Image (tube, rainbow, N blue to C red; front, side):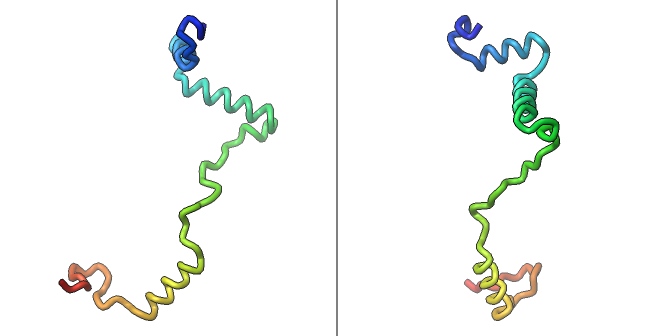
Length: 89
């Protein structure tokens, strides 16, 4: 079938999915679930977290501490939420 579509396997998947009334994304989900089941058994079918495993742009703890120290040392001269800017022009 892929040869008939000029080697476009994505096109073949779309053709098959439209034939059965399912989206290509649905078939991807089934394929991924089957792969996880084969690797991990029934536990592979449990819902998995989508949260990132690492945060490369997260501010380091020492910089966070330094900012907190500076905020205590130099409190704002204008109350938070005030419409007046603390920067003069």
